[in-house]
Image (tube, rainbow, N blue to C red; front, top):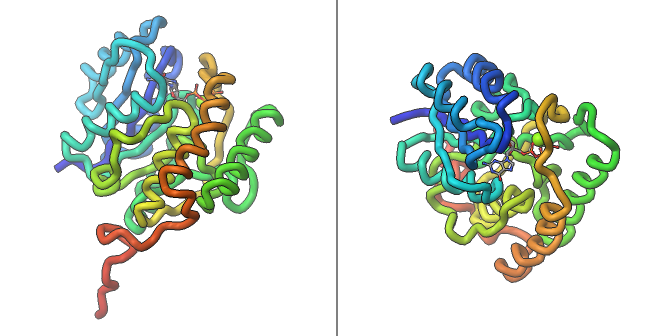
Length: 255
Ligand SMILES: Nc1nc2c(ncn2[C@@H]2O[C@H](COP(=O)(O)OP(=O)(O)OP(=O)(O)O)[C@@H](O)[C@H]2O)c(=O)[nH]1
Ligand SMILES: [Mg+2]
């Protein structure tokens, strides 16, 4: 049975993939990596195949067209469950998420069903971000909390770690979001099912190279989807009960 898998979706990330693979695998030597490439026109896919051929810890899933982050992750989760990984992480290719933080997220998953890397727990930790981007991100967090009651500081973040059971228990077919709202929708489902979600502070850095895939459509999708996400749970503002498989509900051992 394999341990942890770090999933990195890529679209035109040729400049980043080799260095992120090296950095992540040296920060977390026991982990495996799965890149999910949507047939990037810049040739990222071919480069990923070369990396995978040179290191058995690197895997690649090729998809025929760009269908967004959400679809890429869902395909990766199905693969990860089939392969038997215990922990499944999400991470960006562009060095916004520090490879050195990977072990901290993995460690936190010993006592949580879902670990969220948060830029905003106990302060604001973003480097080189334009103020407009920060306002958008903080505004999204406020909006999500207002409408759904979900109490996390950074619900749009994409640096997180799921326990296997969580991905098995949630209805992945039901997840429809694609952009940032994918992150919100996944976390909301996990939380509403009564799983234990914890936030771990991370430092987020603006991408070093390559192009942003962030656009107006992604923001608009998030704005309306939040309503749908809340509606699906009857606008209930907290989980009903702890999930029986939650690590948070296990009997503490005595002596
Ligand atoms: N497979 C796949 N990966 C994607 C897609 N859109 C974005 N990604 C990847 O998802 C990760 C996050 O996307 P980013 O473009 O960095 O999004 P962002 O962090 O909001 O924006 P910037 O950092 O400003 O570029 C990166 O590794 C992207 O390459 C997609 O449609 N398909
Ligand atoms: Mg990015």
